[in-house]
Image (cartoon, rainbow, N blue to C red; front, side):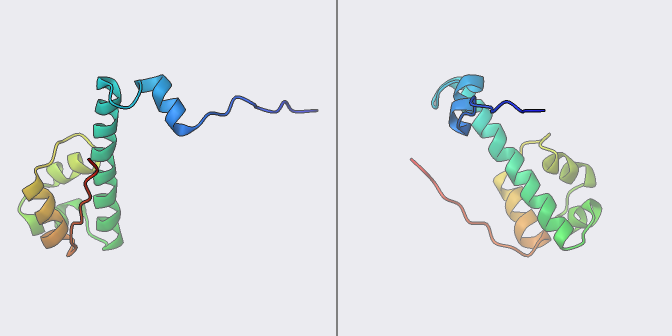
Length: 102
């Protein structure tokens, strides 16, 4: 059976423009902010798992609760910079590198 060729492919930016609005719009900015928070949670979760730590073990190392670590990893909680630094440095033995685009 012949298949139809999909000629409706669009770039990721075009998809985001359509779904959330153009860059700089309030809804697009909100999406981008939430996506960055999501990525932080995923990075923490991956690093924790690579070190074979449970959420509870990581929480104990940084002086917080398993529930808070879970909320960060699942993007259900904002995270203070000081807490993020403790998780990365004390809990995971890493270093935080930031970039800034103006």
